[in-house]
Image (cartoon, rainbow, N blue to C red; front, top):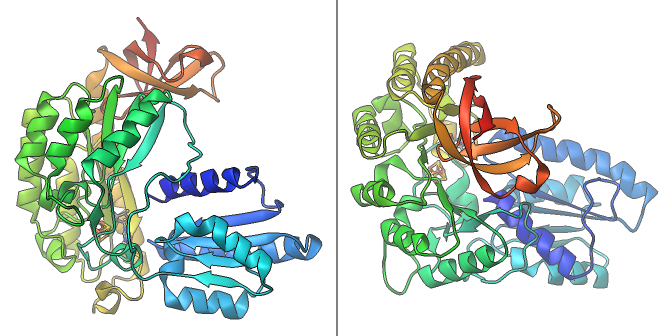
Length: 426
Ligand code: 5AD
Ligand code: SF4
């Protein structure tokens, strides 16, 4: 979601005459911040400290901060007090105002702060500087209504609101005309698409059917579905589709029904495993990935064992593992029985080992098969090689040339290497 916002920000800046450089000694430095875990916040303060020195050398330099972290009052107060050399602060709901905010800063002598608590409307057709020519992310909804007890997102991204199907389809048609072959439909909980903010309610399954019809589009991905809302309709649409990739990122967060209840996730271990069985039965060869939090308040050894059990039973391709981070303002931050750090680290290492063992076995299952691969980039480690992605999201490296990027080729998967394959075009 943030990466997609960054493309809109870059697009706006280019439109008003800026040139993008990846260095912090630029005349204009902007941080699009994350706040989902505390480490992300700490990085921003660290970077701001360094920027102070650059700004002393280059007094015309401007510093802007935006993104989720800026939606927190305490953060903005701290920046106003301790980092007075910041020029512009804005939030997640008013990205489209950036050009105006820069002008306001040039016209005045003081820091410009413009944070909205809620979005007033969805602003369509922002300029966008896309990172990749052949693939693109497309927002289908904004915000989140789920209030998982560890999560700051509902407080910084506001309530759920969906875009109209016709606006989404129009955007994708434009992208396809511009050379895009793969799109990623983006939302905090894509399975509740269509419930809020539309003139007429609709569903994610309906949206998928409409997107499937777009001529020239080759691959459809989506992120992130919430297990509690994953409907059989969506499974059915995936089963019958020729474009939706055989990959589901399905965050489990914990394998313990007790912890899941405390997390306010609205599913049990059994319901999650049942959903996984239904997805696997309908879509053979589907690749599953997940997010897991270790050390949620009150997590016992037995609760953690349940998480390992789910990892073994599902056989994930990969898992994004997070140490629980206390986000002030969320209900979990004040829960009793916060788990000691050494216990969390010991569990975290055991989780990594288990994921590694199970995913190595799972990922090797495709060895010897021939698969459609979208070529994504030139391989930087091995000369004469390119890297591409299978429908199930696994990476494969094989001999190829730069002009293949953005095309779909047939590759035989020769050698399973854990998280990737070495293959050959056939
Ligand atoms: N601590 C650790 N991980 C978190 N996530 C969200 N909030 C927290 C937190 N407070 C993780 C979840 C989510 C992913 C994007 O970030 O696993 O799915
Ligand atoms: Fe956070 Fe839960 Fe919403 Fe995901 S569904 S953004 S974890 S509150």
